[in-house]
Image 1 (cartoon, rainbow, N blue to C red):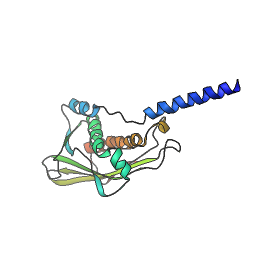
Image 2: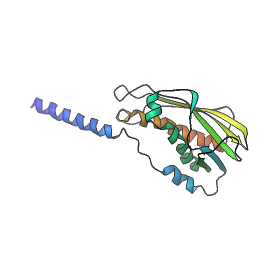
Image 3: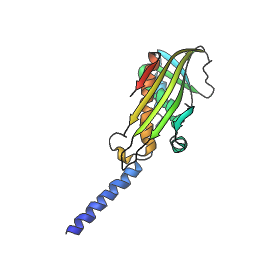
Image 4: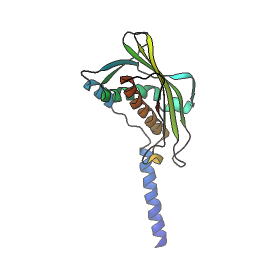
Length: 188
């Protein structure tokens, strides 16, 4: 009888572990594009590059650079949350600070995950950004977010937890773009 209980307990733990592995992938939706389309009379229109690059001196492991796609995902999060603040964020391949109108340039300065499913995630992301208007710098910010993965964080992959930090930063930056304060420190 005792052996049957242990076998059932181990089987249940194995199923939980396998179910958790399925949660390691990050499921993307096109919510950012849908939300951007809903902003019909935006108070602010800002252009951003379709990728937020790592700064030249960024502290980011090769595994994060190669696997987590933070550069590609980050602008979409700013776009998604911009719609909630009456900000239309338009992405483009050739956006530069000298363009007419408002342009937001963001660089990722640090992205780090010091944990694992067993020890707990400790992910951190940092970025710096500058808002330009008609080629002139208007305001700058720094942004930082830390995450342990939230509920059931141990069942999430490192990139999913890193994505949470960048998503939260996207929300912070979208709110900042609406009312930019020079020298602002966003997030944690």
